[in-house]
Length: 320
Image 1: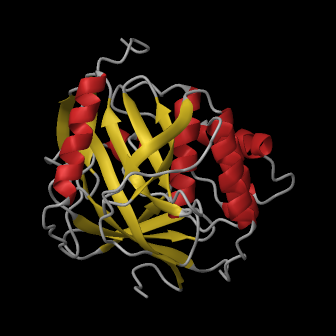
Image 2 (image 1 turned 90 degrees about the vertical axis):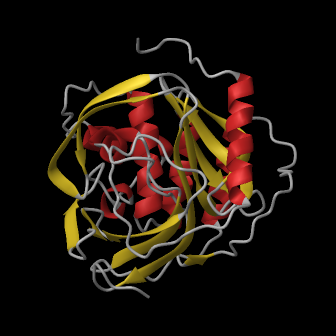
């Protein structure tokens, strides 16, 4: 039942991390335009199967660093939020026009099956996505090569968030209003408010071109959401280690992974912490295809990503 004690044990968590690190050392495959099959609940409402980031343009070395991370003394997640916010405030504002799109390229562990409930830690694919600077539209290539453009989640963008006051409290309130307009289908109940707020911030910072002031306010907002803590040994899809904002909800835990030195974005990781069954699923790349229901066991890796590029372009589908 919702709210029950997570069933994943420390031993299972350690085993999952060991599998992840072992997978990092294997050769990876990177097809250019993979088919991306995701459950509606996973892709839109909360499994966070998209990368997140904090700056543009952004390119990073993808060599694996298996060493431990030393983030220095850190009292709690509020201190992480403040450090990340101060780092964001020192960054120059990106020269992005209101009519442009943010191109994001990332490495991902691909879905295990058509329903997208779980990922294969031993493989990598590339994923490209474009989000309009106004935050209203998102685009990607379907497996047939056609560019698909649709609305975004949570349906709010920089133009809405940058209005005064740009404070953690004000931004959370605006996001909450936007989330109230999200429809839930397939018989699934909305997740708790705290979980949906974390998910929305996760997606906003990964898919949209946000100003330093907005990013700083969002970093300070994250620690105020119940369930968010510090993750000190997170690993992204490129094998880079970092410190994370970690959220544990009723059935899953997700890590928003940052560079421990400058708090720039690295990637994401998610793992289920209890069994769950989803209903009313469909293929994101073929919405008319009914995938029925799917079950996820505790300890299943749900998402693994590494952001390798983020650049403003003039049109959706354009590559730098």
